[in-house]
Amino acid sequence: MAHTAYRDGWCYSADDLRLHFRDYAGDPGRKPVLCIPGLTRNARDFEGVAARLAGTRRVVAVDLRGRGGSDFAADPLSYVPAVYLQDLMVLIAAERLGPVVVIGTSLGGLLAMLMAATTPALLRGVLLNDVGPVLNPEGMARIRAYVGRDVRFASWEDAAEAIAANHAGGFPDYTAADWSVLARRLCREGQDGRILFDYDPAIAEPFTLPQPAIDLWPAFDGLAGLPATLVRGRLSDVLSAETAAAMAARMPAIERVTLPRIGYAPTLEEPESVAAIDRLLATVDHE
Figure 1 (spheres, rainbow, N blue to C red):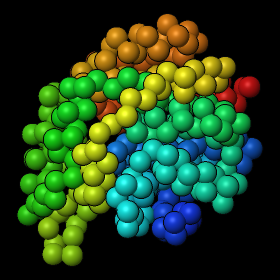
Figure 2: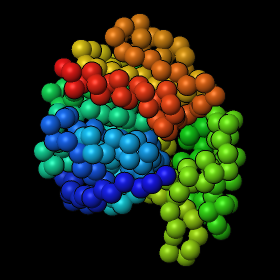
Figure 3: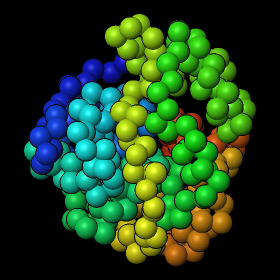
C-alpha cells in the first residue's frame, strides 16, 4: 500500500501526557474524520482508511494514551473510557476539529457512543466498527486472555505467525501477506531488536478489577438523528448478531453492513466497508 503523507501531531492531556495523532490534510470545507482505534490498536490501524480519504477531507487517527506514539500513563487506572474521552476532548479543542465524523473500532466505537451521550454537538456522523452497547462475554474473555501479556518475538515473521494463530478463526481467507500487514500495525521493534505489541501492558490492569454494570443503550440512543453505520464481521465474537439486530430495531435509520468470512474486527478496507464509509460521508456532506 502506498503511504499517504501525514503530519505527526501532539497534544497534552490534563495529567500532562504527550498524546500522538496522525493528521492527514484534506478539504477544510468538509467535516473531518476522527478515527479511534480499539483497545490494543493504534493510529496505524487506519492507514488504509486514511490513505483513501486523505485529500478529500481532513482525517485524524489517534493513539490513545499508552499506545503507539503516545506516552504511557503513570497511573494504570487512567486506562479507562472516561479518561480516554477527556483526552479526545483536549485533542478536538486543540486542533479545532469539531464537529467530526467518528470512525470507531471496538473501544473507539464505545467512545463515540459516550461522545453522543456527553458532547453530542461535536458529532456529525458515526461508524461503529464491530461494537455495540452489549459486548459478548465469550469475546471479552478471549481478549482478556491476551491483553497485557509482555510477549516478544524474534522476528516480524514470528509476530505475524503468532497473531495469525490467535485470530485465524475470524479471518479464514487471510494470506501470510495480510497477517504481515496486521503485525506491523499491531507491533513495534523494541530497543533489543525484538518485536513487541505497541502498547503499555498495564492497559490490562483495569480489567482485573470488578467491572461495574453499565447500561450503554442510552449512550447508543444518543446517536439517533445522526448519519450512522454499523459494520460487523459475521464471524465476530465481540458483537453478536443478536445485539446488532437489537441496535437496528432501536435505531431503524442505522445502516447495517455485515461482512462474510470476517471476524473481530474488520479493517474497514473490505469493499463493503469502503462503500459504506463513502455512503456515510456523502450523507454527512449532503446534510
